Image 1 (cartoon, one colour):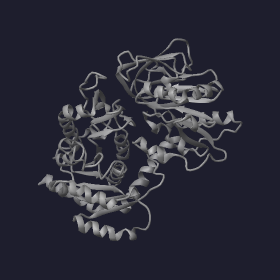
Image 2 (cartoon, one colour):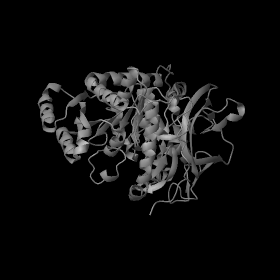
Image 3 (cartoon, rainbow, N blue to C red):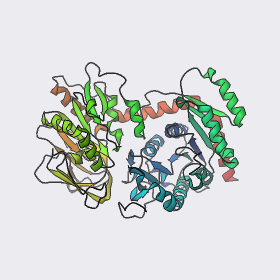
Length: 542
């Protein structure tokens, strides 16, 4: 039996985002496609798709990304207020186009073991356990995927498709909507990616090819070996053997690129972000609670780029140390993650830190936890109807079936009298009310709402001394002026002089797209890549 509905099914809005360059419909046959598949998860499909998207843009093509089904807790809100996978939002940014739900029509957001919230065209459909989703929904999902891809192919010159996991999962192949069956629907040449960092790269490529059917093997046009470190000449005998063994060319050996500067999609990547050493001289120590169901962890990416900040993740009392500031992040299951904090003793550390004058920031679920009570009468998040919160704000949060997903913009009234511009996005099912007056530092509106006084509403809460605050806005630390103001407040607590804000995070991110594209272009056989696309272009025009 399936899990209970978390929201009523809504008719999806298939239209592209307002203002999208894709509004001009192509009058000819569907555009060509090209697809990255991997021998495993985290082989580098997302980042190579991003790189190829930006390469095509640099070369003057109008390009869009596509991933039929994504599983991630790190999501992205489109300009029209829909939710898709973070990777496809990032890839749309690399294409310099607004993201739409057609780029990721199905998003799975794990809630607990074997159960995920299924988001279709940016809106929650219902919760499914893995078996029921596979047996009851994949047939309908196939039609949704085909229609979304078809629309993209009428609006762009080329569509770059990202697969999921591995195409060699023999237990899943008969109902596959993300790898080889999708490649067939799209008539896409496939580049098979393997991560040499994992070891066994030749075995993984040969083994994958052996499991594929003859028709699927024919669709693979070549291999890409990713994350290589060392002297490529030492790899050459293996490459020659691989090409002879499979009859497929190696189209690129991509060297490992440190400090890519682009966001990750999978929380497993957080381990790679652990500081390589102790806090440096003159650095602030900022601790982020690593919740079991941590979501939207890209909220903290800008802090890793600040030279006077040392960020570390805390998942046990023994990791606590003496942080200068603590961040309580977003979560896909607020109630269960609050229970985790309580059971591990971290809750007591958080409350003591705040009561002793420490800096504390809560984002989305973390903000909800900071209130007095969490109410879930319909059991939407967990099996617990009511749970006391941390009690730092006089607020109550009730979980409702309708999810709020919006891009927002507005101002922050910062301690000291500054008014700072802010923008971000909201993804939450809770509604928060205050039982006593409280200072709310943000005044925000939906991004495309009229810029009128009645379009704004208050958000967040802040203690009288400004040291404890929370907000529903994801991406709040991507606002350069606010981030620097907060960091300088922490510096003043330590008796340190404030520093000017030099980091322009979004500008650095745009430069990172070009750096990645240039790196991949140097090591990928772009002549053959273009030959694959042009062959499809000729075929559809004949």
